[in-house]
Length: 53
Image (cartoon, rainbow, N blue to C red; front, top):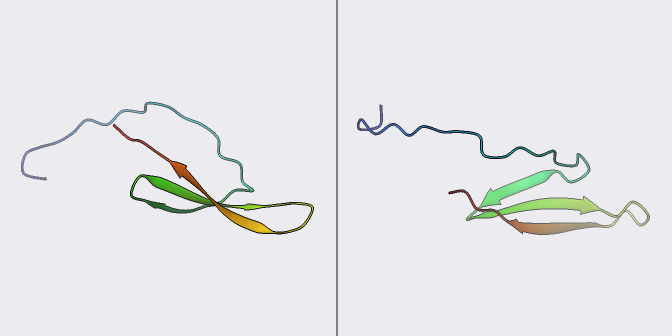
């Protein structure tokens, strides 16, 4: 137990994430993915802001 304070968690939303963009890190409200350009093979890291209330 965590000091008698138990929070109820519920699913707010659900989505499918493309397999070709693996989630590398989630940190400080941001999610970082790696995207690969299929024509050139070049990879870039993309940052998404996420908010959880």
